[in-house]
Image (cartoon, rainbow over all chains, first blue to last red; front, side, top):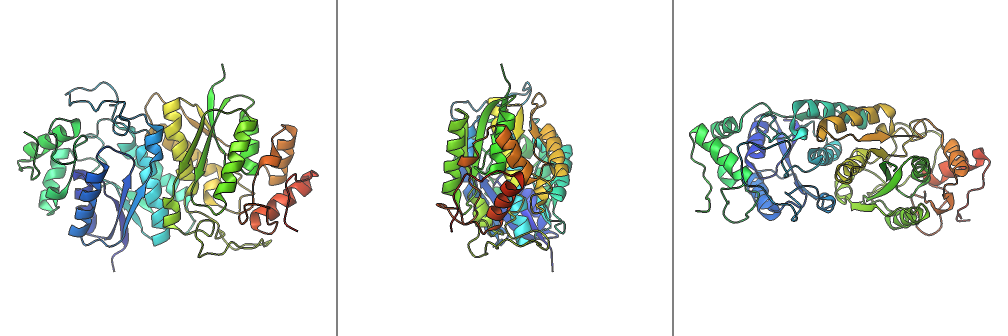
Length: 222
Length: 222
């Protein structure tokens, strides 16, 4: 029998490919977190469709609307503008949600301790993640230490970051090789029906497919 | 001008005295988290009354009902019984909420990064906390490391645990010395009007007041 692993599935490209990697060795449980992001409903649809694709019955959807109330990011705060893509961004972009991954993983750990999952898979990428501090390997290493110290002595839960050192185009390639349902994923920061093709997230996605030599299967606004 | 510190205020004894300590050196901001605990409404009232006592205007109340949905603790899961107090408990008691403090502190860190608070005060006690793994100093040290790595490079936020090595009776004594509003605090795990006096939390509180030689100012069921 395969051990159980929780995969954090936003509905985007990276988490979808991470799920594809995890599915090789683990029984899957999918966790989705709404944190008041603008395209929440569309991401949730992508989550459900990817879960159906992999036949995942253990699903947990958590809402943490307090992140929106705290604000501080253009992803969740409508007073801040989602920037158009620029080749060079000074410092950490406005889409950074303060300490976000810590919340998402904490939910996964609590759930893992109850359902006896051994691994938590997250599709973070260090080099290709706009400089978010909580997407770095050193951060996840520190988090594993915290899990070890903050849970029951007999609990063994570890974060796995299989795509941490990949570039986004390599993630696209890996996803295609593993037969991941890339056509079901959603990346756009702005729109919920047809992807805008102009926000940072869309541009990075389109560049990645181009470099991987694969046609992006989703539609974009003209 | 004093620097800003966030205090995690549950409404109980420990967090009230922690706020009293923090108030000596910092401007206070109070954070309260509802996580589906049985006595949520009563704790929130205590939170508000303690905030009024200290004249705290920066208040944030976050609800994380997903912890209740995850379950696994008698504090939030009505299928599990809140145990009567016993002198000896084998292992970690059923009131342990998996990884709870990680969630509470993560909310504090996100809020701190937005309001520019420098410290997060939490009233955890290592020896007198029923063996919860996330109440140990080694856990908080690991969390400070995670904050350092998971926030913007220029952000400096640190967890402070001023009562970590005190016994509960010493906390009562310290609170009395600092003029903390102990009469406004709530500890009972079971009841919301008059404290039961028989659950683990009530017994530990009553023992602490007795040992400190101070009369507990709240009422108990006969």
